[in-house]
Length: 292
Length: 109
View 1 (cartoon, each protein chain N blue to C red):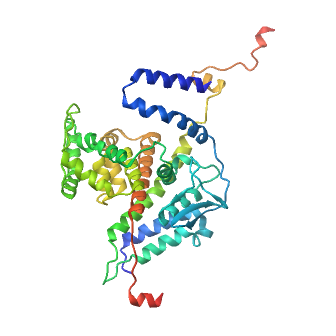
View 2 (cartoon, chains in turn blue, purple):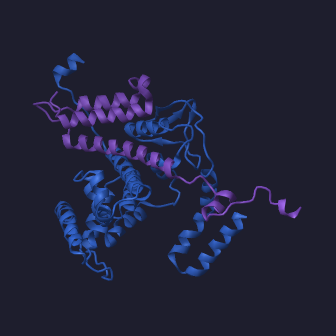
């Protein structure tokens, strides 16, 4: 019963948005694969292993669930280029209780996305979609009333914007009306593109995930450069909600869950980008070497 | 070891979160525990050489702690508030102050 209904909805949507729309072109090929993924993912998965461990093979790190190798939803072998990332993913699998909660395994899903690339995104696609957020950045849109909120927005968001402008030598526009047409300088786009080009494909998936969650490229850049903590970035992203809840109180099943989910998504993306970018070597001092 | 009190607290909280995952007995043998320990040991600031920005490691450790905590707390809240599925006829009727007769065919006789 559910399948014909889904088809109907899809056809209806396709008819409504017209043949020329870009959305339709990107929308169509996704559906069949998504249906398959959904049918796999809605089934409850019991914990079928005792221990998740990591192994190294040809410079890549794989996850073993007891004797079996972990695979991605598309059936590829799950492997990551960084040991710490592999350890964190294994910890994620180890912390599962009787039923595996796939919705809260953000690091695993980020790796899966990077390995499978289910939306067939190219590097340039990813970079332009990340920079696209600059036009409608959360910190760029200011309210004009109430006054205390305006003050709060200026006080909290301005230092971040100034820091980013100095750090990257770009212009971040600030609007007070949502009807203003965003106008980003070509130089700003070029600088950001150049910066993002320096990241690996995998790290770009992490960037895109973080930007999607925070709805702000400025905050993500500040976070990746370790200027703000995850908690602070999430609070800045939800500044208006924070302001309203400070007046009217919070509801645990909505606000608290929202904050926690956002924090886990954003911190997963930050860790992901950090570990993929990292290339640290440890040099011990001569005396310590002897004692070791 | 010239670690400040803040760093020590951070280290302890990280180990506490890992203990939740691995349990008390096996924690010490688990690779993530050993890795975290090694990281904190290796990157302590010495007087002569700062091998790596202290801020960087602290930020990374805080981010990971935030990740472990947020996921745990989110799952707790999720388990508490998630729907139990569809309501039964009785409880739906009860919502508007009605009751369902125990034997619907009683009046027919």
